[in-house]
Length: 134
Image 1 (cartoon, rainbow, N blue to C red):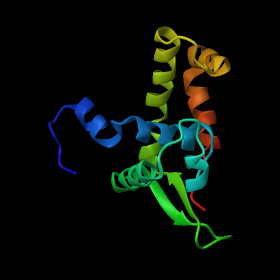
Image 2 (cartoon, rainbow, N blue to C red; image 1 turned 60 degrees about the horizontal axis):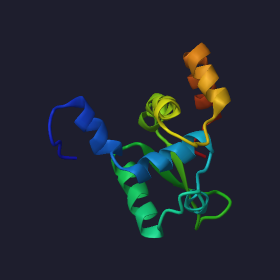
Image 3 (tube, helix red, strand yellow; image 1 turned 90 degrees about the vertical axis):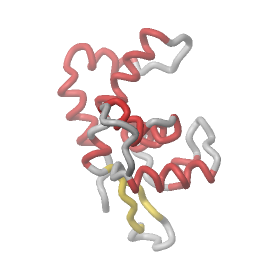
Image 4 (cartoon, rainbow, N blue to C red; image 1 turned 120 degrees about the vertical axis):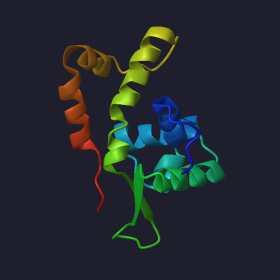
């Protein structure tokens, strides 16, 4: 991938700088979705062409990997790579920011409390629950 600049924030944006990519990562991390159909059935109703292109982009930049399901060779499963898992703290901080600056949101109060009280344990618990490659 060609870098726009040497800025670390620009680098992150090059990898996950659109809302759809962030929502796919959210679904993989927090909701344990890992198939195309599960990802397509998210609340935001992502168009199929957008979902396909973002999955391909996330795979190309090394944030997710794609495998064939053992139970159905036609089905593809998406899992987070270590780089993908490393986005968890970023997403958590986005939730905290939204709790301060958003209105009428579906905020996960228990998660917010754990972020304040024991951020590292929360991150470890969430990482332990993320689906791994089959």
